[in-house]
Amino acid sequence: MPQPIKVAHLINHLSPAGKEMGIVKLLNRMDPQRFQGYLVVFDKVWDTLSLDVEKSELIAINKKKGNDPLLPFKVAKILRSRKIDILHTHAWGTLVEGILGAKLARTPVIIHGEHGTFHKTGKRKKVQNLFWRWADYRLSVSGILARNLEKTIELPENSFETILNGVDTDKFKPNAEDRARVRAELGIREDTVLIGTVGRTIKVKNHPLMIEAAHILKDRGLPFKMVVVGDSPFYSIREEMEEKIKKYRLSDTVEFLGNRSDVERVMNAFDIFVLPSLSEGCSNVIQEAMATGLPVIATNVGGNPELVSDGRTGFLFTSEDADDFAAKMETLVCNPALRKQFGEASREDALQRFSLDVMVKAYEDFYLKAMDGINGR
Image 1 (cartoon, rainbow, N blue to C red):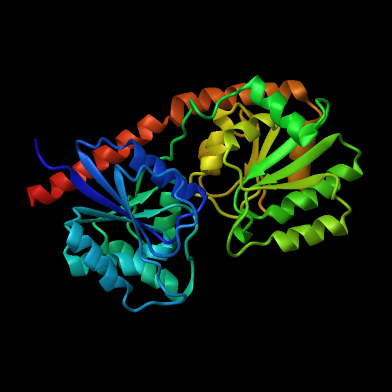
Image 2: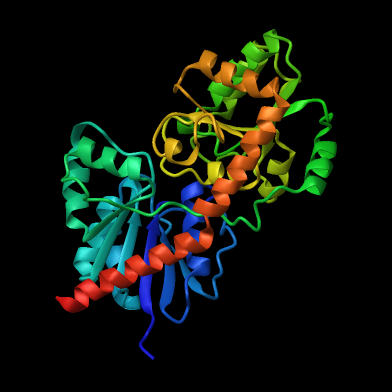
């Protein structure tokens, strides 16, 4: 039997976030007879996210704050010592040092993945253009994002291939028992519409827009409550959000639940899932909400239109438009039959399009194709 292909994923830090959780899900599910996984982390490991360390080696570099000129050499040393076949870098945070390290180590295959947020102007745009071209392959989590990346950074069309994120539809699914228990824990009455989101409390997720929209809804006397699941160990804007809540006198309406290890239970308590992000690739939390059978209201940015079918599984709204956001929420708050209809369509889409097994197979096939290309040369 041939030796497993050694695939190393390189990320900036390991904490509860969509990109990182998606990589961990991939590593945990890849066929160990064909692949050996490695997860290399530049910065701190805040949470291992249930990475199966018996299947995949976790390597934390714990780099210094700011730029570390030795980082490419540290990456190269890790790649050489483990005889890595494929290095898969992820997003801007690992692009330069990762690809330089792989070139120094003469790693056979370099793949770079983009997940949503990228630099569109200035020197960093030029750096992306150069280093994306240096990678042997480029992957995007959304077809819409792929075409946007190519156009904005001025790469030839189809420079990026697409593999959508996947969701565990056995873990994230409608559960009436969880719904009743979590709502009881939170003190939510059955006739109160619970609007929720899940994500780090950082600028790109644009939670303050939720508070602006909640202010509009409350002025209209609607029976709702809003919760934010998630936090961030760095770059958190929670203080700004709390100031807005105080300003609009929403302390009894908007609640922070912090990081939760039972997101699948908490989502079942929601009536509506919202995501006001400024930028997204292929949102894991939208996929999880849809698998849970929830109607989704999200910004019309990035890969969101590939996931949310406007008017069938939820609504898309104009980014940074609190009035549009509030209007979409009001429609669903006031129409339980429409919430049910959208939620059932969401679950159906998740089962058909967002299977975790389909995602894992797509990555495995891609890695095999990449190695076949090297062997062919």
